[in-house]
Length: 196
Image 1 (cartoon, helix red, strand yellow):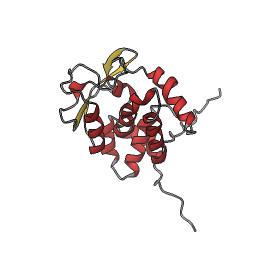
Image 2: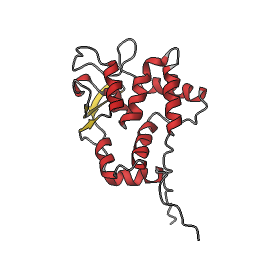
Image 3: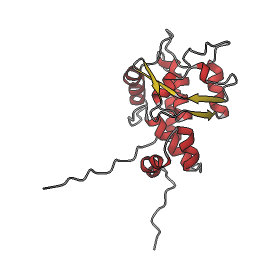
Image 4: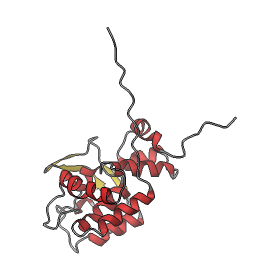
């Protein structure tokens, strides 16, 4: 009886810093989807899963936007626990804090979503990907990668900048082994074969 080995998964290809800046500017300058710029910046700067970002409520953000509680997701109108069923608190960078403060209403309802459409409803993952993300990447001539790749990008850049896998895992809600299995190949500073 023949056995089949499943080939290893190819490591995700993170966006470069230049691509990140171009994507953010592409959204900022878009005549229709400019309102999604803070959401896109949040994805790149937080490492959150897309459903975690979509489901983020102001009640989970500290008043000064210096911390976020990530403990739930929103996908296709259904609110659930995180993928790992574990909550985490993120301490925001000054840049991310500034992004959140720039969109924070004066007295937000704790139940209201942080990122919404102009009509005040939740962002729909499929609509975002098909109507905004994919066309903007195509217009910018940037190789297509799913919006979820913003998470891979955050993790890869964080590891490359020298953050420990344990630190990155705690920020992103990963098990450390999962981080190694899925992201170790993304780090550009991974060892090279020596010259002899």
